[in-house]
Image 1: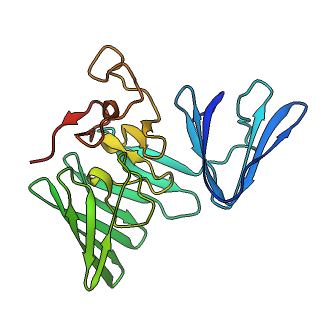
Image 2: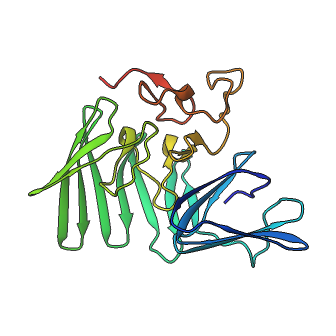
Length: 245
């Protein structure tokens, strides 16, 4: 988790409104039963827990980063090709990821094994096995690769997204533009972990290395230059126009 300095905005989703308490040497934000996303001017972010969140800010507007105040929810490990290889989630089995070239194909978490089946650069199905129990989802996608239908046996699930890929309901392994949402944050780790895209805030969490004078454009945090319907950015570096053929 990046150190948060001078938060620029706070997004809330859910029930209770936050309560603010001013203290002599710190500023404390408390709330219950909501999801909290804090966005910093420099692009850092953190996310609270669904049940209870408590963030303490020092008098200089920086978040208290002491071991007592800091809680690590997840750690990411990368392979030699700079792809996310292992996700260590707090109090859960580690998630291992395997790729075929640049495409995520297998994910293993304890006894659970998930496999993604592609055909001609298109998502076709997902297979999940937990011991002797297996489930197959046949996927229906749009021209950008976003999963709109998932069929398993007699079950059929329809999925919908906002223009930037936020999906309120649960669903299969893959989602917006065929990308896998991070299990902890819900963000899309584009480029196999190169940059995290936040579909709720509709922007990247870190700046584009090709901005402002290269192909990244003037806004280093913008996703597809504000046109996610006609463009996609699978690598997290610069967008591409048009739909997949």
